[in-house]
Length: 454
Image (tube, rainbow, N blue to C red):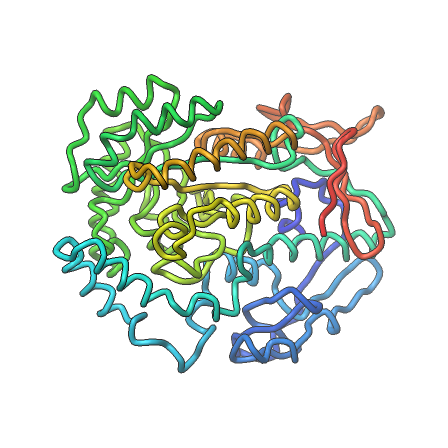
């Protein structure tokens, strides 16, 4: 289980052994690790069938330490996978699922969606999402449960080893404090035709972004359009197949559509993908052949498919790198919350950068044609420009995040007579960082830069 810390932090494997107890029960449920960290899985010290009772089962009280060996009442790798892959979702509200969350209702909506006036669609969407503030988990507006679990186990390992400082490979290149990406999903022909104007806005604030384009049915995708995006230094990715909301409905149908998507990936030489309306099943991702996915929200309270991966750090799903969406979509803010400000975005940006995570956005050219919405977006990118400059945030493209994360995952931390150094392709941009214990928290230090983990 030591590889859990090695994968996340890229530490040298010298923090002692972490082993799980054999689970005494077959029951899967919710429990806590300490007061604030929610877990989902098997635990020999007991689990609750629902979220509300999880506080009664604190697994941290059942941790056993013998010498340098740490024994846990659960398998941390399994719990992290359950959170990242959203296996907990079906058990959050057992017996209380609403009719509007039924698959039949969702399929019926998408069957008639194109026949409905825009105002009717928005009314139905608001009705579907009206309970979003009542959802107990993940934590709104950004959830750090997976990140907090890693920090908690690093802290335990450090205390058992009697060390107050652990070297690791910093999360982002060149010592950046956090990472920022802008992405644009093109849903209609009108959005496609507004792409040039949106690129102008991004460039005027010093940003390049990615455009996810629907390859079938919705609109034509001429070669000139693809070439313009790429010639200006932006990324071209695939957005679903036809954006009908049915991609993950049934396994055999999904596999057929995944093959078609893979053909478009090859045709356009694309490396990234996002599904329509953020529908997803990470257990099926093995059928895809693209390099990275951007279909999993951090918190999905306001998405058609509820859940969330509970992390602000990219992670691998098999061979695919998942680059999660960590902020609220523009459509949701404008048309579901009826908020034409950047206040929520500013709050999310602040929370994520404090945890040195990925700040990722979706803004649709289709919805930014409207002058009022476009003005809000321009305020956002102006704020992002100021924030990235002030705080040393790495503003980049999702493809570059994919390249960096793959390179970082292959790097090694090596100690020699002069101290710690990093080996591996791309290591010239990597930085040795240190996790230092200060009371009950871990503080990260990179050279002269110091950032604290709450």
